[in-house]
Length: 350
Ligand code: GTQ
Image 1 (cartoon, rainbow, N blue to C red):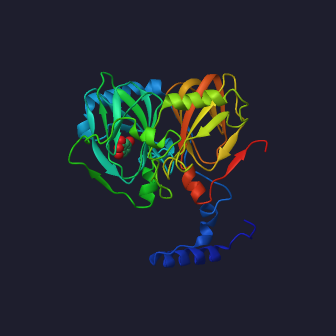
Image 2 (cartoon, helix red, strand yellow; image 1 turned 135 degrees about the vertical axis):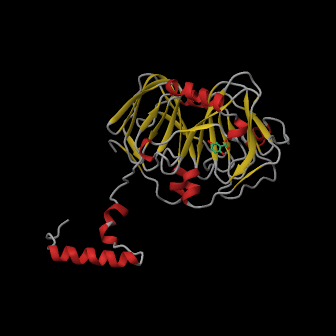
Image 3 (cartoon, rainbow, N blue to C red; image 1 turned 90 degrees about the vertical axis):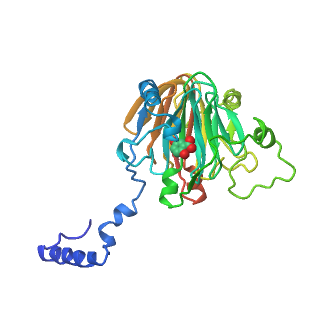
């Protein structure tokens, strides 16, 4: 403030005025302008790391407490420590660890919220999306776009755990949430497994396919072996000083992000590589699929290992160091920010 201190009388006058206009549901902008229009992002979100080795037993305990059928989805939500009770990991994104036990089905439903899955632990489960199943293998990135029917099942003999990422807070903010349960817990398979990937994800497209703008991709599984092979191939070249070897997942028919509200990325950091600090306006959720090292976010730092999940708030500097060859998956609301012309990134030293 550059103005002279207020007299007691003037302070009283203002307080009285605020009280009177408050009766009519008004409030003065000048008292809140700095907070409403900050010079740079001032997020309430805090950085945090969830160590999978410490969470796994509790995820498994949930498997004894409630069935997938009763729960509809048996998920332990990862709540940002500064946003407890709000079911979100950043202001715009939800994340949780979902467990499905052998023989269980998490029944078919659909909702306007878009979801991604990143398979972490166990094998033998599948997700079905609009009549096609995909087997869930560790590291697979699977999507269920807005309003697609989906269920999960486990035909194997092991508990299977994956990370769910959804745009629940975005849809809540917009008051645009709809959901419905299917009459049948499992969808009738309409196409063989692999059909969508062959039609839409092999550098070809069906003859008459014309995607609408912002239509989510018909490819609903990005297999880990393909992702890893691409990262290993580009890792023969020079890494980017701020990102290492990092690629974004796309709708192969359009080049846009797989779903309009959530962007997803995969990153390879060779053993010993340390990134330079970078910050961006999209708060992001990261998962270590291979390797381990150290993550620094602002003043905080953590060791990360396989299956650990960490959240980086908007506009906080991120630095990563890989102790062994490391592969990280991440997701954020970047496509939303880019569509609105809001996204910014700042690379240290530039
Ligand atoms: O698997 O459909 O973590 O509807 C939250 C809501 C997962 C799902 C979640 C959901 C799902």
